[in-house]
Length: 77
Image 1 (cartoon, one colour):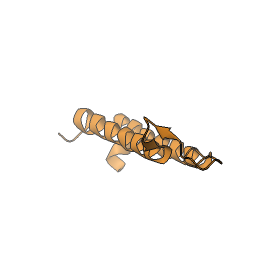
Image 2: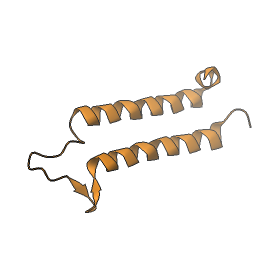
Image 3: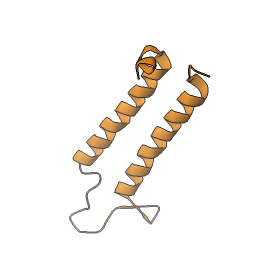
Image 4: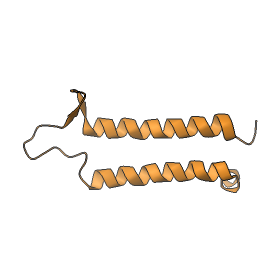
């Protein structure tokens, strides 16, 4: 972790991960994962519920950040 904090791309990588965690928490606390009052879930593409969509987006952000950092900017190649 110390090496990542001393490396500018590592700081950016950790900042992206922290930002995604904060945005996920904001989405949960604002009720984006709650079912509407009518009781029917909000569906995206006709079958994906909002908690699933938010979770998939969270994982995709982490995967892209991981691949960019560890393929392009990893200091110990």
